[in-house]
Amino acid sequence: METLQRLTRRQLEALRFVATHGAEGRGVSLNAIAQRLGVRAPSALAHLGPLEQLGLISRFRGKSRVTARGQSCLDEYLRHHRVAESLFARAGLSADATHTAALEVDLALSHRTVEEICGAEGHPEVCPHGQPIAPCAASKSPRHSVARPKTAALSARPVRPGRVGSSSRVPPFRTRGD
Ligand SMILES: [Zn+2]
Ligand SMILES: [Zn+2]
Image 1 (cartoon, rainbow, N blue to C red):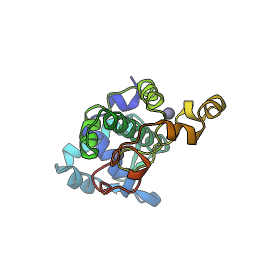
Image 2 (cartoon, rainbow, N blue to C red):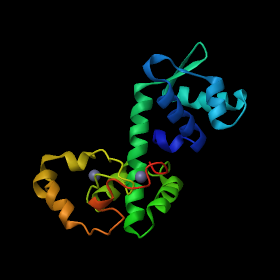
Image 3 (tube, rainbow, N blue to C red):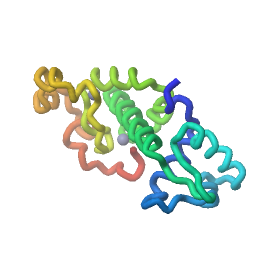
Image 4 (tube, rainbow, N blue to C red):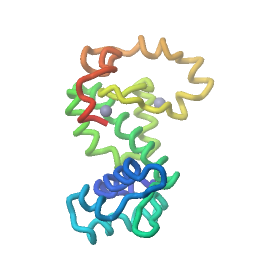
């Protein structure tokens, strides 16, 4: 099973908090994590154990820090989430609804499935909230860039106002979406 598929939503939330607030090697205290999760310290610690065992965070003197592996796991998570959002946008869901729907599947999808959706969606460069989607392996291959140059891929895609098109790159949803 892939790392993302082994994480619970709460563990992911803790990992994201540690990555965001443990910058410059300072680390994040257990109390801060517990406060963020809205639980007591022992419960927060129970979420951190699996993250440490998976090598996603390191703990030292009570402070948690994200590891390189943890950071790449979060990058992968955002790919999963935003590609799923793009799929739901194509299905006709509103930008807000795509975020909620993507939360229901983003941890469960395999990397392979996400790559297949990404290709089927024409390798979207942004999610419905205008957040960037990192290029996948397929879109970076020379064969792909010859066969589907960026401009052709974009102009070939149906653009619906307020949804996935270039007009939504600076959307009003930034605070809610990922
Ligand atoms: Zn792709
Ligand atoms: Zn989004």
